[in-house]
Image (cartoon, rainbow, N blue to C red):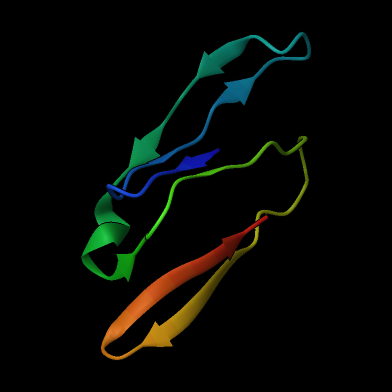
Length: 66
């Protein structure tokens, strides 16, 4: 998964051999959430992705992704 500072979220779906079979993405959330840096996170099938947000003034800001 990549969540980048320009606001794109891309998820690389891999098969059992690690080959990317699809890579859906979105940037809809960037209207509401600021992403100050790029995050790259590897997860196995079924693992939980956690995105921590913090209120900074009038903005919701991503502060941690794991």
